[in-house]
Image (cartoon, rainbow, N blue to C red; front, top):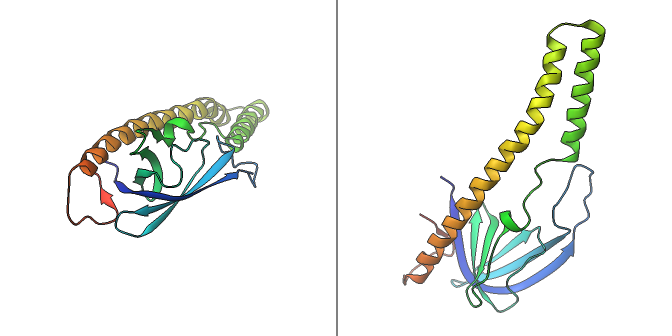
Length: 176
């Protein structure tokens, strides 16, 4: 089970930046990133960086932020009722440029080794490349779908927990 935590508070500041990938292997689905500063109800501030074009809140709005390993995955605006599951809105890419180049090079290398030397091993390398690359994409897609559903369920539970009054809450609370 994933370890979700959530924090409830007021948006102190939101800044928008344009993404410029430094390396050709870095690919972001969103051309923008947002830095969100959140002041929790107990006082401490949190900074989150999200690669997205969507931000359902602005300065002064009360929000509930759902975190997975210190990364913001869902943001719910308590005043307007809007929420964004960042794995649904701007998901990470399934196929990366550097992996495509590696798959092509391995496939060509395996086929040329088979043509020059023959045998089963070079042919197995080419076959594994042809099967492995779509298999990796399929596994990433499945992991993404499961994570999206887990985020939705955790958001529902966090909203239920936030509605229940509790006198002494820590700043970060765990979704059980």
